[in-house]
Amino acid sequence: MSTAGADLDAVVSRFTTEVLPACLNFSAPSFLAHPDAGNSTAGVLGGVADVFLQQNLSSFDYSPAATVVETELLRTIRRVVGYDVGDVESASSAGGGVVFGGAGANFSCLLAAREHLKQRLAAQGRAFDPRRTRVLANRPFTHFSLRRSLFMLGLGNRDLSAAERAKECLAEESLFEVGTTYFRTDAEDLERRIEQVRERGEEIMCIFAVAGDSRFMAFDDLERLAETAERHDIWLHVDACEGGQVLFSPRRRHLMAGVERANSVSMDPHKVLMVPYNMSLFFLRDPSWLTYFTGDPTSLINQDEESLGGFTPGINSKSFISLKLLLMLQHWGWDRLAAEIDRRHDLARRAADWIEDQPALQLINPDVSHNAVAFMYVPDDANWSGRADGADAVGETERLNRLNRVIHERLNTRTPFFVHAFPARDDAARVDAAKGSVFALRMMFGNPLTTWAVVRECLETVVKVGFEVSSAPTLFGDEVRA
Image 1 (cartoon, rainbow, N blue to C red):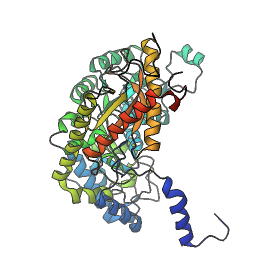
Image 2: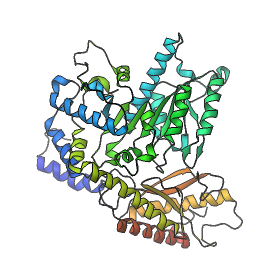
Image 3: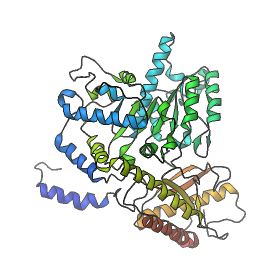
Image 4: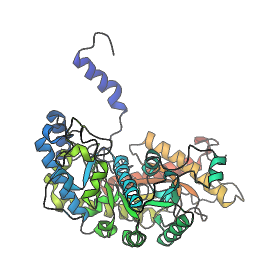
């Protein structure tokens, strides 16, 4: 910045030469890390129109047309989820809202769960205690937004010292971990955890289920979890930010059977429906629960049943961001969208089969639920430079993790490809028999421009880079061997 400003051409030129070249292109066919392609032409045009329209959906008075359109779009997606939709077409009838990201969508649903618990306890003449309120979830495969939301909701006891917590028999966090089986919440262990929490005299705010986790795209058994939640009268939230796409496919929808029984659902169109950032959705099974979010009725901004701003936690002013999704759906249509969702699964399944045929690659999630494949490069030569003679299993896993970190860095910085990578529990014991932490490479498909030819070339490049790194110690020094 300068005191006098600058010519607009100079400003644009500086951006295009200094900033633009360093930006990742999520829409590139070779960007395989995440499905957030954002390259629907109709969606992009909706984003452009949103900027020029300059609507403020905080109030019906400020955005009558946009409010009506967004409300009907929410009601349409609500039907896709399987929730009932009433005849009255008010903003509150949508029973949900448009927010700026999956973290915001999950937070909104957890806030509703907290307020629901408060009201239930009040009806029993009991007070809500944030220090003794728990949320049940499988920690390893839930999104980070769960723990962040719990902190924001004032749950847990991180403000107390370990000694203070021990004196009062309090847990540090409100999250109560449930076991997993093949990356999914273990329904039998959930039953045990419910019993343990109640034996401690603590309340359960909700069960946090996952429909398509952000690492391996594993889907919890929602029918079974819903049955458990209903029997124990516990709020069930489903994080469907990644997996919600299958609801648009008659062929893949079975993965989310039972979602209509959940109390709340979060979805993320900017992740899986090719619309540009940012746009996410949340829905509550009973639209009347939106009243948990209503603000001060004396506000200068209308917060009546016609104004969307009264029903989005933490958000009042908001532009017409839902226009991106509306135009994309109108342009693509249900059949074409379903075909694209199916294609992603077929692409992932084909990639998994190719990986299984490669001696040097190990598939981490053999049960490919939908559009993600995670794998590691595991040299088939017993004398590879990173292996130590007589190494125990744990030591060997860590050396493989270091090897794959090097491969990941080289793949993303020295080749045309970009994949995701992360440490995660080896829940299928594919590399670590003790189900310890492994550093997995991961592809997740969502770009219509990504073809099998691109995916295969990327996998071949992984094998090539892996061979170079593992067979030539001078390429990485002591990084892997140490």
